[in-house]
Length: 151
Image (cartoon, rainbow, N blue to C red; front, side, top):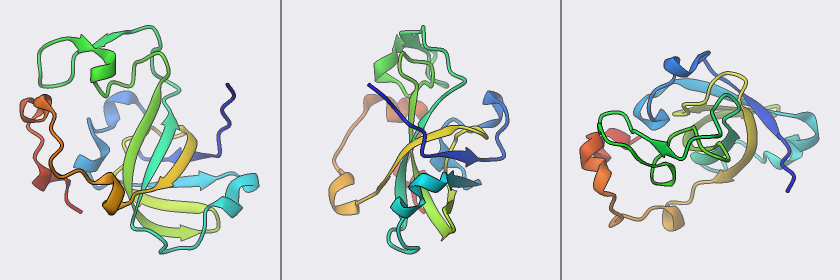
């Protein structure tokens, strides 16, 4: 398996404690700088309002198989959490596209640290990706409401 970084995230978050628990709970602006060989893959501005960003959590631990999500007070298996500490520290975020210019995608809603390598970008499709009746028993425990995630 071989992964190639297609770009880098520039954000105001310099250390792990700076980033919010979930990027979509904040409206902080970041930039995704696409490397020259991949700029042709960016497309035209305005083609979609939201994107999935997959990134490599390069400062995460890779030796942990349990995590205690903030606000829960109980340890859980890592694959049932969104902890950055995991065997393959791949992060995923849904970001609001603000602007696309010269291989730089300005977005809001990411929780990635400054300098985080970008693995891939995919368009968010409301028709495919939105599952209105999806459930997760821990959302109420984490006090996450759908109304907090609009925008």
